[in-house]
Image (cartoon, rainbow, N blue to C red; front, side):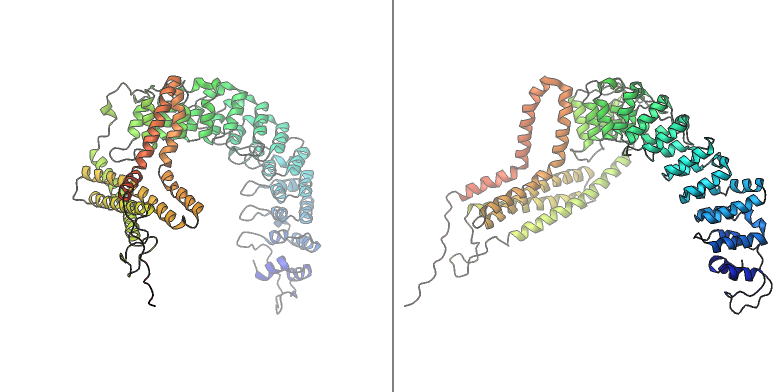
Length: 637
């Protein structure tokens, strides 16, 4: 398209455009001497004709409509031409929100004949959308009324794809949606993209739109999209939706059977709710129809299997405490796995405890491979080097304490046969663990070595009898600080030596494994002593002037030891309750004192280095004579 013509169409005046089209030089095109009018049938890169360009002008002005009339008078066929996207000038005018231009183009089409006007309004672009879609998208209810007044059947297009009603609901425009329905007399398309209908959009846009669409056509509740999802599937997948509970109840009231429609993957709405962890949605479904708890998907899984597989804790806890559906707890999927099998396999402690704590759950059912949950727990523990406080280890221990049995099968069938790969994996663990632990052990050794010479309180003056010695030497707290620091240095140095062996390729794998395990233990003791040394040093310096602050620093310092054992402590606490429910009253009577005794023993083991150096300090300090401070020399008379 000629640049001058395009410029005049977009931003020039009507008079200039008229002059150019009549072959007279326009004032806008200064210096032009053209006498031949430009062709009206040229197009832009996007396939837009001159009428497309004029119709797309934003702003409801008389000048733009006069331009459109001028172009139409000279080339009437341009009114029906589609650009590269399939848009007619009417699409462009509606998209621009120019109702005066839209009205003009509709009148011009009517002047060409009723069928031509009807055909223009029903013309679809490449997205299968008419000009009515653009009017809905622009949010102009008057324009929608104009289109529907000319052709009340326009809201029926397209029969497949995004309908104007679907688009209005998607944009949450209740007024336009109601206009479309009323002016169409109910003969309206509810279709949406990907096989959806207007109700699919409404359930995710609020209860008002949902009520309105259900009032028009409650048969939409049974229609499925390309993936087989009904509106109930869709709303079940949105656990945090506003008014979600009310919308679900609306759908179930309109069609209670929607609970029993599966999608293309064989999942029912209750499975969808379980996969997103929506406990509230599941409870709504169970209240409406308790029998839906036993529905199985294509893999034979109940909603409980799905919740465990997706590691959603709240649906699992809720199901295990709902006595009315306890009959599903031991149901097996196509692989013979119960929910407990999957919980052990996933290794999520909270989910395992929720199922394990229900005494109605059988511990010894086997799956198709002949494995019980205990067999799976054994297989989950890595071969060779591993942390004995891992969740997998705790789960196996809990099952063993609950007297769970292994499957009736040869245990060697469950063992890995690839010894070379197992050895390689263990070597990688040792190598990586050595590097990480070595940083910590060397850092502790460096800090404690420096602390041995940066003594709190400083040193005595050289003119003192014991010049150059610590001024606080002989005090109980100083001796305790020195021993704690020395023990921290000693254990960290020993750990460093062990890590040197564990990282050496010349050392055999069993020896390397032993050294890295020993190093971990030594570093833990070293951290305990380092923390104690810090607390004692701080107390020694602050106690004379700020005793309360000194006590507070000591208390805060020992939070390090609490944090060091936080993970195993939490896991043990989580496992206690379900284990007690499994064993009953008798076991509780025996277990509580035993647990208390074990806890005290655990605390003493952790604090054993502190106990050792406190005892040493007492022995050293007993009978120790503190050297009196040197008296200043008597001045000469």
